[in-house]
Length: 417
Figure 1: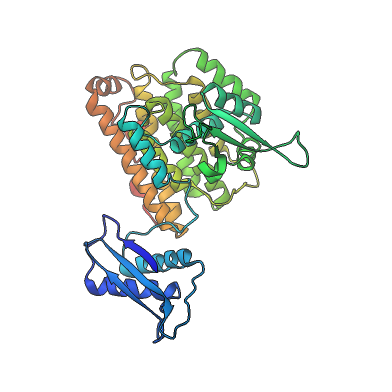
Figure 2: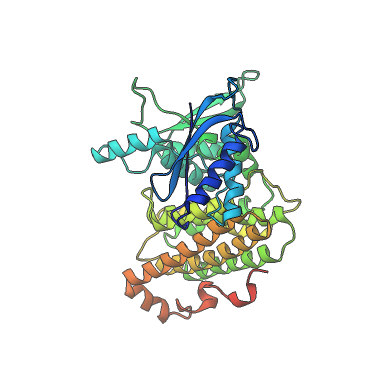
């Protein structure tokens, strides 16, 4: 027997029986079990017992008594669904293998929920905890040695993989969490590629030796000097928003997709670092927005621009500064965060325009959702503490002033072309 379930997105309209019959027929033909016009194909049935999904069940024996063998049926079914989404105007899903991370499987989700219900673990899966910890270390690190040292200080277990040809050469790594073990008591290890495609050791090495221009001795010294003050100066907070706005302008004006991708990646690092410094390991609305932005900025292949990208360098310097600062204070740094988040929302809009121009519609939608979540976070901050709103208005940089906070600045002149 062959079985497949097909479900629409919660935002999709309710499909008619005729539409579901068309979907079922197209998928069965795509996987090769019931090609169009083949009167001797297998017997199959589509069962709809809810408004939002159907089940396809088919025999493996054709009516001419030959066995029906399938190959790459999952890929073919997914490709058929992508075509049907466009044909019927449904929610567009990214093609398989184009995601920015490896999602937890059912076994991981069930185990996490079971342990969390018993009060023995966090509600965040170990895979997601490790992905965030590794990304935080990668953003803050200057080289490979610094990266592994930061992971160790963060309580992450690290296991290096050495070359079989040259045992002194490190070719990869795996990470684990203390207490997250198999039934036999061994640590559950996750390779960098099992967390996200851009967290493999080769991709990380290209990050540290890239051409963004942000990894310089002067940048390291400046970040350390500011961190030693214990708080981010007000003028620097305003410059952060200015750096992001400059990145928005650079992304919209460049014709070099590699440069635009570098800017988007640096912005994703900045938002992730700010969210982790603000909300901690437990995450929150900003972390969710950062995850959406990361998905929108993801590139399946590493694009190295031909020359340094100053806009990406500025964003990277801000990321490293926040990483060195560690945890941001809600008493001292809230106004800075409001400036930064509103500016990053504008950058998410620019990223959505870029993805739309590239016909990467799923990433364009995710970028718009990231922008919406960032603006919602700003509103939430102000609603939670009106004192902070008054403090911002008493400055020369009022929270509601678009030039101060980068809030959709000159948004009317940057509509999608």
